[in-house]
Image (cartoon, rainbow, N blue to C red; front, top):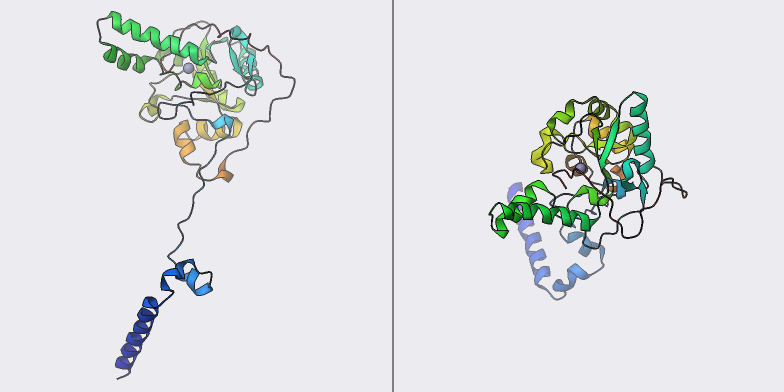
Length: 276
Ligand SMILES: [Zn+2]
């Protein structure tokens, strides 16, 4: 008997609610500021703020091109007359010096590239395939496999360097076996650099193994990435909130050593690698 009473009571309550719902003012309930009104509205969707990455964690790849109006950072001239973001410059110099103290001879063969220069590289590559008899469309597709499409090369960001052994300057997989690369792979993170395109991450990075391409990300991120054998894409995916961003390198001092590049002069370049 008690059960029937309970059911009856429930039906009554439901009826009352339904009637109230149909009554006047019900349509504005959602907007009303009354406590009961606001609570009855369905759970608010949690707004996830997109994580904004600082300069040293900027991701540049095929899916994340630089904006067309990207302004290169302040650059400093490093060895072999290449240019790098002034904020990463002191750490690169420190790394190269430390290598030299071990009687190694690292050579920076590529660093910052102006967009126009990347465009030139890309057009030359297209021409190479046109000369082989491919159509314009085919040549462009083929070129994109060997030279980064302008806007998608990390070198345009000013935070990437290609380093080879002075005794072995070929950009091929043998480069990995050189003493310079062995040392760099073991120590780059101490200076805020990572081996950007590890051999077993081509499917994620979209770039074949490049044992000479190093990218500046700051010491904290570099230690994580190299220590846990991640690639930059995987690492950034794990940062889902602003407070997970590692502290960056200290801002470069006002009086940055190294010369500024001359106005309008694109840095000279040799040995362009496939990622651009
Ligand atoms: Zn490179």
